[in-house]
Length: 224
Image (tube, rainbow, N blue to C red; front, top):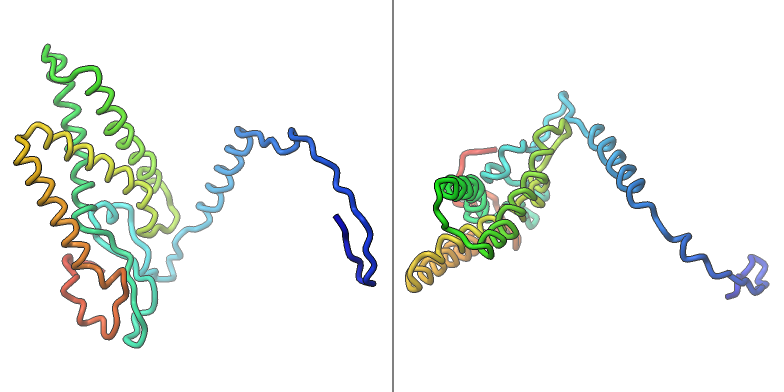
């Protein structure tokens, strides 16, 4: 390797091989340090009572898709984008959370009363595909309830991922008990509704041109 000086002269530089152990990072210390740093920075991002933030939202608004997030100016002369999820995906995944919890409670009650509804493989599948994602949703959502910092719609996205997994498991688990034709019909309706709603709301993702007044038909709920 060579290095150049400001006067145009160059001289060889030998870089010794580093010890592999020098690249090791203590996981526990880094884990604690990063989390403390993250909590410190989050605690500093508190809402300003003297300033109205129209983009901020509360944790309870996210699962029911009560608000979206304006991504740019709303001027008629520019292409506008709006951060808003698919209503069927949001509402379906949110509804799946309590329904799945009730399903688990029902299985536990029946098991206590001596019913043998599930085999070992089914129990493992419910735990891996349903219970773990539900726990993941709780761990990603509940902390925002306790936070005093300003929050926005996109803070729900990690939790939404796990809610969708719970919905997928619950939908599949319940439809598996139906006749094949009814099961295929249920999947067909679900895909049609979800894809149809996506197509309906395409302008907010692909860009809205012209006046925002012409997109009022997308406002399903009375919110800000």
